Amino acid sequence: MSNTRYRRGKLYAADMAVYTRQMAADNSTELSRLKRNLIRALKEDVTPRQREVLTLYYAQGLNMREIGERLGVDKSTVSRNIKRGERRLQRCLRYGAEAFLRNLYD
Image (tube, rainbow, N blue to C red; front, side, top):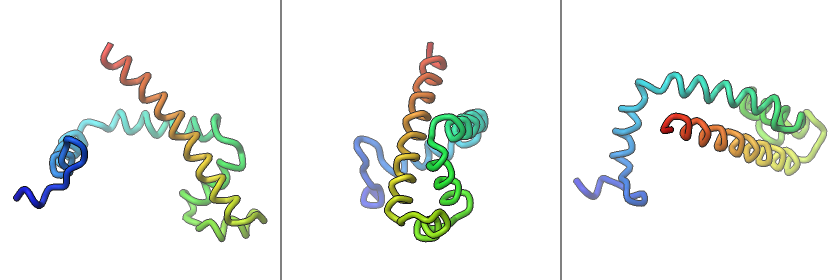
């Protein structure tokens, strides 16, 4: 049985799966808050070009070549815009999550 578990740091993947299932039932408010914050970050914290590229990539499912053709730029430019936009969103959401957790446990 121990060979079916995969070690990740001090936690096991099977334990994390159980934890995720247990927490899934009561995280609807956190998910709605995360969605609200993501939409807000998309509107306020990324550049218009990054927003356009992220929307085409994630919402419309276009690949980088198709986005490049549509916008008249190289595929590598599209890739760079996606990565930069993702990093900005991660930073915004991470800092928002830290503030939320601090308020939760204070």
